[in-house]
Length: 224
Length: 290
Image 1 (cartoon, rainbow over the protein chains, first blue to last red):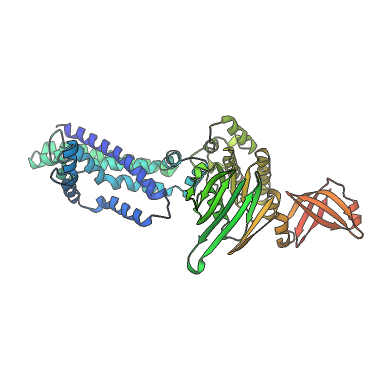
Image 2: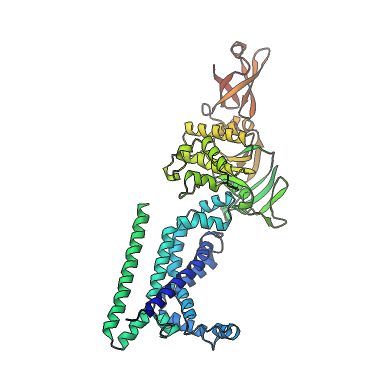
């Protein structure tokens, strides 16, 4: 069995999770704590847009991202022309696609956790002379630890299990875009079931361990 | 000196109400805000803190402008150097008592933390979480956290309403001591006449859609007290004999009040004596003395 797809999968999932953390923490802060009584309509639209990957078939998302990243259209053309960056069928494009596809898996647990933090604590923090960044770092994130951990675990696991978007956007280039789920698919296509079994088993074991870890986190939270 | 003039509209249609208040507070003055529920007492505090935006007006503190609707100026809460005690205390549940106090500081000072822990008798609880404290301890921690940052303005939103009478009295005394030690301009929202008389030099009584009444606590409260409901400690300052009755001048909280006594009863009193007075109707009666 070739371990290269698993290594690529791990890189993709790690990068995606890190980018999602950087993107979703400020986004969740804005959705929950910035002028909570105002901008409701705008916030509802943003939240719905972010949740679209939950219900859209991955191939639909992959198709639109492929068009967007294509060197013959809009953003892809502009990036290629000005920066020489090619997103379609590249690892970078795969990471960006995964960020879009896994966005709700990070955002939803974070929103759930942030909404549990009473707004009076943010106001108390401001009255203690602390700015928004200090309130986020010292009050909101420590109180949202279970949601934060759930978001990290779910985003990572979801990226590992991604297939449709990866196939549409990255194709199947060994060492570049061939992640574990795609390698498994290729082995099945080639009727190479013994190797496919091994790929599948590793993915099943990974999913099992992740869900077990998530359950342990939830139990720990319940005890507190 | 704190000077402000604030206007804010509430609700819609038939439910629409507004609050309009203009005041000046002397440095270190304690002002009480009173009035029926929903009249906007908390909103006044929140506007002063920058947690709620006023519709119109200004707030100036010691020459600094905190808010000015004409100039479209608004200083964020974090830059107003204030202490706020919320009705629900808003203690940080994941931080220990000591860390809650540290969080209230503008600059780190461990000696100040130890001092406030001692002043509020929380030293033994320093490592505990707020959930492990009693109501009175939580209240003391909230007060200490608001004061440890040496605020220019202290805002207290019904800070003692959830406590029983003996505990309320104890915290009032601690607050008095803390404000003597660290004189701070303070606005206190309260329904408790005794608390207002003990702590405040002036009070504002808000009524729905009517101009606010401003005066000393006894001026505004004497006529509204239910007999037997408000008994306070006082000190006899002077006895002024008259033809028929003697006038006793008493010091109650920050206020002076007078009451009439038969000469025989007045003869049993001496100047400086501690007495208990019951405020009722429009007058005060000495109900107990040493």
